[in-house]
Structures are given as structure tokens and as C-alpha cells.
Length: 507
Image (cartoon, rainbow, N blue to C red):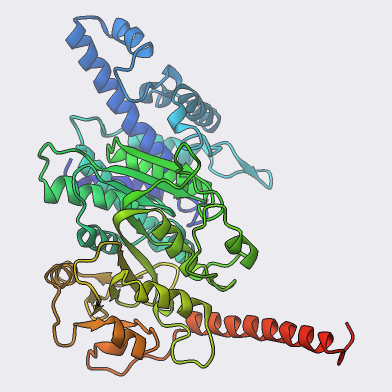
């Protein structure tokens, strides 16, 4: 199938479930079914291949496959599509059992395909009635998704298309699982991975940033030639999103990928035998912006000593994430991270100290920040605010310099979100690789200039694009207000302690 035909067909099938299930939730039901159809059809193709290669019957080939490692996933009889499409009643119960049996046979799929109950009842009513389920199964049965029918690249693109369509309909919650593919492509090209590298995303969502690194490396840079492959590592805190990431990576036929479930900041999954953090060549990430929930005590008593640049404020873990990623880099490692614009400017120009500015200052003074790229507004699903890509390099080629790129105008208006253009991506990457200034687009500053500007690294401060600098975003203003309130309380407590020690007040 051509990509457009496949995308339209799959979206038509997905739309069957849009009515009875909330928009942000129905992806959790349709994606496992599409995944099951794909691996079931692939399994059928592989059984035929093994039978031909061994000159055996289909039945004998099935016996051999069950006790060998000749296929990546063994699909038990109950989960084979030919049996699913025959079910005339109790389809919800059958599908739930089939996916759980598939997970039992393939431990890699546990917690991935067996999370959803297709027979679930809410207020005495089936969440998805039998008729809708049958319609989905019947429509999925119209076309094959085997290896000879759909190439992994095409299947993967269709799966990503569905994720974007789900994101379009999910509102702000989409930010938890989807980073716009154009941003992911930009990051992949900026980091330009080399053969054999280990690539890490500590908050991988649906796996898009890792997958775009793979596609750029395999399809565009090396054009399918045989070179040592990349190795991918991801961690995701949300179980549903973790399941999507696993399915997405398998659909793309990426072999050297490891995704774990859990809170990365509290419980990093990838460690060496001695308990220290695993180190990576490249880190890519779009962590939750201005994330709350991590205390000063958590940062100060971290067993991995990740936060030696400073303790972030309680109201924003942005520079906590950056420090974790920095601690996860090899000696010559590089990373590109998406954060909100306030992360590179909060606290600058204000009297007194500011926790984020103090951490940012240390990154600048140690000459670790390579570039800051301002993106267009309204790209991301969790906010209309623009984001920035911060590039950090432990072995900078351009010492004592920071490249600031203002790409805020490189977008096309679409609904519901704007889109970074292909020309815009190429322009950003070209200027970064050539390390050059361009009027109204990029500026190279020294560490000394950053220091003179109180460590404000917002590209819009240095690169004018013909319009006044925008008023502070509401989210950024709220974070600064909460930080100020936190500082006020700390100062008040210190003052009380001093007054008490002087005997001027009682506890």
C-alpha cells in the first residue's frame, strides 16, 4: 500500500471508536489492535518462509517456531488474526484474552498489549459495544499488513500519523505522549548520530525522538548501507505512553532499543553493574515543562550526585532534568533538549539570587552550552508558548561561544497547531553546522556577553526579527511568581531564626 492509502484506511478504522470513548483515551484501544494485526500478518508470512526454507508443512513449521528463536514474536493460536475475525460473539472478552495470551508468550510485550480490557463496563454499559468492535475487526481484515504488503518504514510512518491525529484531538494531554515530528527531526539532524552510538531519552513519551534519530541515521544519512547500528534507550513514567512507545519502536522494526517504565529522576532505569548511571553518546528529550513535585531534599541527597550545579526551585524541574541528562553523558557526549523559553531567561535581570539562573550560570561559565534555538509558538500540544532547543556539548568545537538562533518565524499555520516547515528545519541545521551569524536569524555571543546580560540566553534578546520582544508568557510568569513566593518564605524563616537566636521573638 502507498502511505496515504494506508494512513486514510487506518484513520477510518480508528474513527469508529471515537464516539463511545473519550478523545484522549481511544488511542489506547485502537493502537494495540493495529499492532496485533501487523504482527499476526508478519507471523503468518514468517511461518510460510520457514516452511519453504526447511521444506516442511505449515503445521511442522509452527511446531519448530514455537520452540526456537526463528521469529521475533510467537503469536499463539488464539491471537492469530484468522481466528479473531471468526469470532461472532463475546468479541470483547476474546480480544482481551488473546492479547494477554500474546503477552504471556512474549515477555517483551507484557505491560504493552495486555493493558486494555475490551470488555470493560461503565455504569452498567459496555464501553465499546460488540457491533463497533466487529466493525473495527472487519475493516482491519480488509487488507494485509504483512512484510510483503507494507514495509516497516511505511507502517511506522502510518503509526506516527495516527499518533499525531490522536494528539490533534486530545488537547493539552497530548503533550504527555507526542512531540511534533518536525521538532524531533530537527534534533536528530542537529546531533547527527554516528555508527554505534548509544542514544538516550529519559522521558521518551511515544518514542518519537528516538525513532527520528533512527530514521535520519538509517534512511537519510547512511541510506540503508551497512554500518554499526545505533542503540536506543528510553524511559517513560506513564504506563499507557510506555506501551505506545514499545509498540511504536517494534512497528518501526528497530532492534537495538530498550524502553523501561518508571520515574527517571527518582528511579533511573539504566545503570552500570556498580550502580552508577549508564553513560550515553547522545541524549534527546522533551521533558515535562516546569514540572513540580521534586523537593529540595530530593535534589540535595541524590545518590547519583546529579545535581551538583544547584538545586532547582520546587515549581520547575527544568534544570533538574538538564542536570540528569548532563550526568548521563559520556565525556564527549552531546544532548539536545526541548524546554519552555523561560528556562533560559528566568531570574536574569532581577535583583538577588535565583536558583535557575545560578544553575544556568554554571553551565555557561563551564562552557557547556553550544546553542539555544527559539522555536515558533503554538507547536506543542501542552501549551501555545514557544519552546527552545538547548544544545549542550561536553567537547565543544567553538570554545567560549554560544550560537543563538531565532527561528520563531519559520512556521506554517495549521489547525489545531502550527508546523515548523521543512525549509525552516534545513535553515536551522545549516546555520548550526556552519556556525555562522545571519541577520535577523542567528547571533554568536561569547561567555562574557552572556555574563554581561546576567546569563539571559533567550535568542529573542540578541536576534531581532522585526517585532518587539513579546510579553512574558503566562506560564513563565506564574513560575516566576511561585519562585518569588518560595524565596520570600525562605527569607522569612531565616529572619525568624535570627530574631529568635537574638531573643527578640519567641517560637
